[in-house]
Length: 119
Image 1 (spheres, rainbow, N blue to C red):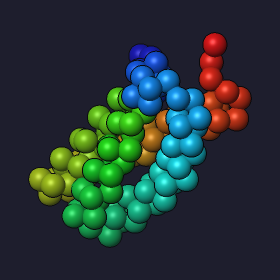
Image 2 (image 1 turned 60 degrees about the vertical axis):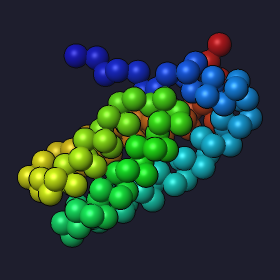
Image 3 (image 1 turned 120 degrees about the vertical axis):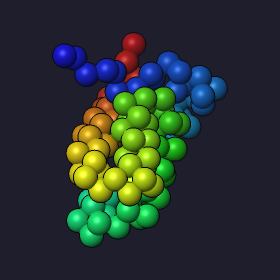
């Protein structure tokens, strides 16, 4: 089974009114902040700190939404919902899914930052 596209680049650019420079600036900020968010999510999972986990997943969801990164948004939303329901047995698997999808988004944004927008 193929993974869904990391993001809808066309829709994301529409969100930024076609402003490539703004997209690149915000992409760079996302890459920097998402790395720390993933560390915090990992620490919250290890400490079984479900309120912190829900908060960080919520932040991740909102940030990924800016880039129309639906797989990351969905993974973060499921992680947030599980943490809020205190479904501790689900959060480890959901945390890994959120990490993997976020890493895919980070990799794609880095590629665009370094090599430019696809033609």
